Length: 302
Image (cartoon, rainbow, N blue to C red; front, side, top):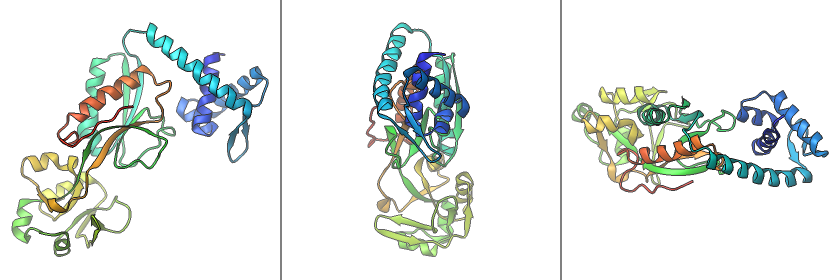
């Protein structure tokens, strides 16, 4: 058995917090991960992880070995990086929100693949924030504040939440001048948003009585373009419609602050060269987008 593989599997168990989580991360079966961990414990001659039906806890011997293992693997990866100056190879698994992914992440990923023929990729589009470890993801695009403090993020820009409507609707029903005016307007609302139908403008909360609710944002935008009412969306979701005049931006003085767009990953340790290269490439490409980069963007670094 590969001794480095044993150490990598052991660290994956610790980082994931479970044998099942490590198996998903490594894309192996749980029994295979259990066998590898048991073989390492037999080789070391000590219990490294205490297993119960509820949780795993690392032993003192496990902590010492983990520190050494991270150093060994980091040295191995550094040596490989020095020796492997050739083309990038391997698979990437990327996640992004549905509309953002289709309009922006997919073209960026396609250009990266064009530049690196030895790399393959899967793009998972989902408006729900998928767990990177559970889903075996290398990188995810996240829009909004991060709830998982364990993720490492690179900020590539920002978007805003806009209130918009079609010119035809505004000609028929008038233009709201303040958030409270929305009570007198027809609303097209995204039912995929959790909680009651309401929009917040700083400290002001506007309770809505939507005329139409839809659980897919692209359909929400389409109905707004058709003049069905006022809606609220992320700026990148209506960039084309605003540019060609099919939608009009409303209540701009009352808009909430900018929302960060970030590329996230679980760790920078032992990061494969293809993942590092994609992060650098995607950060540059997304940061140049008018709908993301903007003049107020403040890119960060991993």
